[in-house]
Image: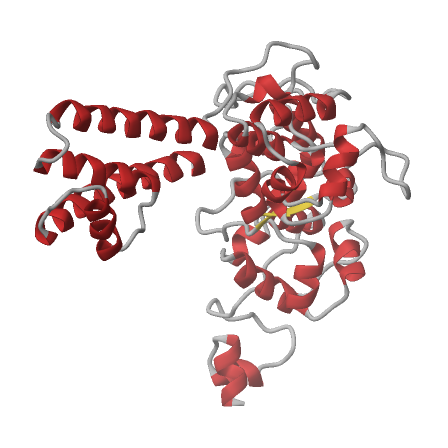
Length: 371
């Protein structure tokens, strides 16, 4: 009895009064449940970015029962309302208000977004950016078929992490993704690339030959097989599928970096003016040969007599230019055979100086070739 009195917030003698006696003022009066409580629950659920399955798992009921509550087929019990208030991080009075009332500030921040028009908006922004469905699939780590289902409004809920990833991909704020289709597009979206035409394979082959590269090198940079790249260059489709093999926007940017040109050069028609060719290994060899000849001319101009020390150093550098890895004893023997007498420390200093310059030029050439 004492527990019942404490639960009803009344004195013990109120429980022993006759039925119909006046109720105490301190007793807890049950709140009035509006017939539109289902609409209010659906409103708060959408604001929190939750699904009917989330509410069903929190209340211990099925999602079909949650759907009946939101359609006003069933009215929830008070114990469910207390659980929903704790789930939405708000007071019970906010849950019992009419639909459209101001939302509480303490409401739970959404972890998912439920919007039936978000797929159409994503497709609109993707086309404005000039991207393919494959680009969005790579960014979200899903398949292209799932992106197609999203744009056809077969999926209406998204996680906030997916919304932020798409916003970063489109160079806009996440709120622009939640606008209805046809809303003004953000100005921060960069200009779209031209449409990838059917002759992109012929243009790739043209630029690849212009840069002196092989198919396996280009295929390894794109992360595809050489046969796949061969089918792209010859505009052939897959045997199992009728659609033609093509590339997405990210691969176009990789090819532009590989060919040392702009992306619009790849999207031009075959036969268009080619960009300046990148430096090749032959160019670096030619530069090294010119430097080598210049060094030999300078040593030849400095050496006045063949039998002197300068003539010996000139001959030593000439031999080192042909055989950079020759041993010091063999070099001294060759000089002695040609009639030169030079001390071993002087010859060692000459060899070290020449090999240091030779290594520096060779390293610079390799680095330029790799770039």
